[in-house]
Image 1 (spheres, rainbow, N blue to C red):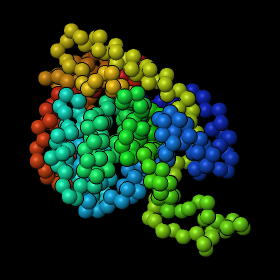
Image 2 (cartoon, rainbow, N blue to C red):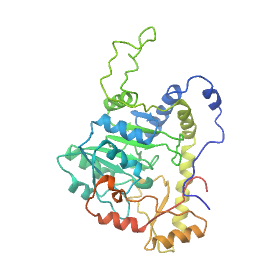
Image 3 (cartoon, one colour):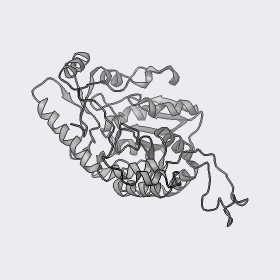
Image 4 (cartoon, rainbow, N blue to C red):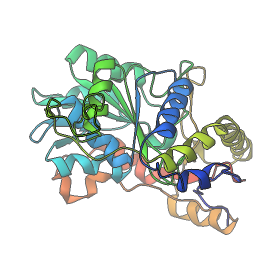
Length: 351
């Protein structure tokens, strides 16, 4: 059966053995190169790599000063990995509804959920399909609320000719976990609009250390180098970074395959009762097609039908408002409708 997800790994990693035996394994030469390649690809110079998607969110929240007791507006129709860090830190998640034809945040619902305690909007681009980017960014600007783009599944997706990570959000978090592309086995990255936040985030991912002053002329830890910020041990190793560099050299080829597969699915499904997941405006939005999304009135029979034909279809995510860790909130009709209809089909580089 053709799988819904499959980890990509280049056939050759010529310098990996040298790195493994170099004695220099932590974040260094390859980590900096990976960041530069990401910056060049996305079009944003303020990108820091980290060792997991979870770290990407934690470092971002700490950098932005979002803490326990604050409120963040988010979509429950996303991966649990996107929202669990809020619960971990004691941040109150306020669920907003989604566009049931798209799967991403509904701007009018977001507006309704804003309170004086709201610190940020966490904008998930569901399964790689860009959401209402201008509208959500404008809400954040008008309300003086931070906007964080959740690109856990959206690396390479584009909006108005710009890649996610460079479309106006204050920060964007990426996952490079095994089933994403690129994947670094595990890892992630953060893109910032503001350079000073980017510099702060680099310290926070590294225990709050100022690396340029941390050691003195003898290589000893300097008494003059203060640690004034909380931080995490979240730097990405050079092994993972090197794998990311090699994968980025092939990223356009992989995304082209996925987008061509999406066109093929559109042709095959023309005469059937399924509706493809909506792209708001095809001249503006270009999904990465991490999966090919469709909507059907008969979800379970549709999943079984495609599996019988050799395609591992799935509903992918359970709405996170089903989990008691986030507290009981109002029923959201868009979420209910979307979850009853959404089915994902394989669309990746492997077929």
